Image (cartoon, rainbow, N blue to C red; front, side, top):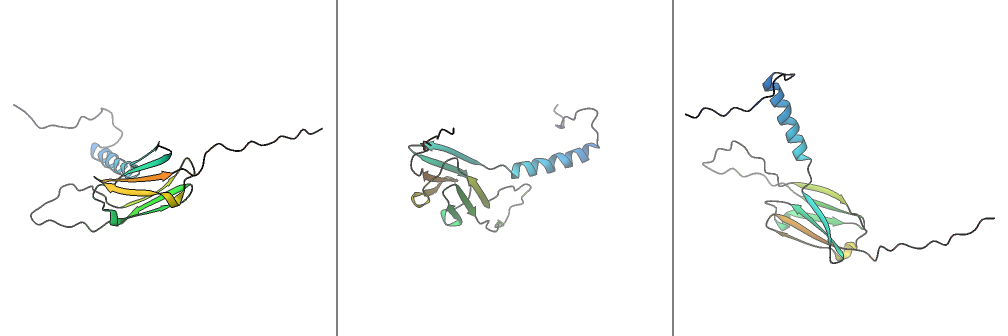
Length: 141
């Protein structure tokens, strides 16, 4: 015979279990909302930025590029109610607002972007070579 499943609690908690759960749920929500579902990598001489954006269409996204950063915004549309559904949990977000510092300088005029299967892919060609400049050193007497 199977009984109800009960969440295990560590003995000796400092607070009443319900209050501990309240704080835990609050901080889990805050920490998960601060995560930035972004991947940045280099491929064939350009940076590639991939952002998780489920439910976002291309016409909802604004991408603004600068030599050292990228800003991605997507407006959140009103959630439509579906007749006959009763929601018990709904944590989907379609609003994005990220400003991402880039590890190398890019050419903002050559950036390409696409949206497919809930992923925004931004291709950022590097600006020139990152070889630096040799500085002549003078001997002080």
